[in-house]
Amino acid sequence: QVQLVESGGGLVQPGGSLRLSCAASGFTLDYYAIGWFRQAPGKEREGVSCISSSDRSTYYADSVKGRFTISRDNAKNTVYLQMNSLKAEDTAIYYCAAGGACGLYDYWGQGTQVTVSS
Image 1 (cartoon, rainbow, N blue to C red):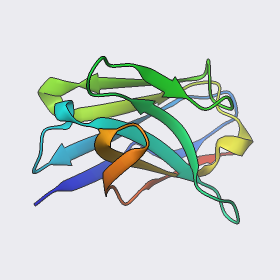
Image 2 (cartoon, rainbow, N blue to C red; image 1 turned 90 degrees about the horizontal axis):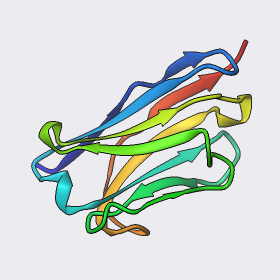
Image 3 (cartoon, rainbow, N blue to C red; image 1 turned 30 degrees about the horizontal axis):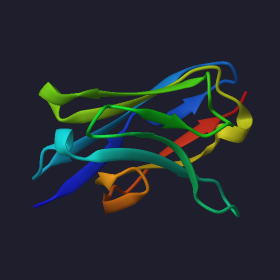
């Protein structure tokens, strides 16, 4: 059964850090591009970051550039999103997705809540 499971969300103060994990089962993440998305209440889903499967190129939304880092651990079949200098506007449900290329996703996780608040 193909499955993506996000974890690592929680409540953090502004300026703090979290590391989200996207673990795959039923397929090998190394062969897929992995994207991170987020959706805040009342807002549309926003693409946050992506890492390609081929040359490991990484992409970031302007709103997170310089603060978030996407990476892979193939041995653990997991992709991470390290989030530093978190702001209140980063509060959202974060989802990961896998597909043949950044922007073309076939599989989606259920999401993990990130809340940035003092």
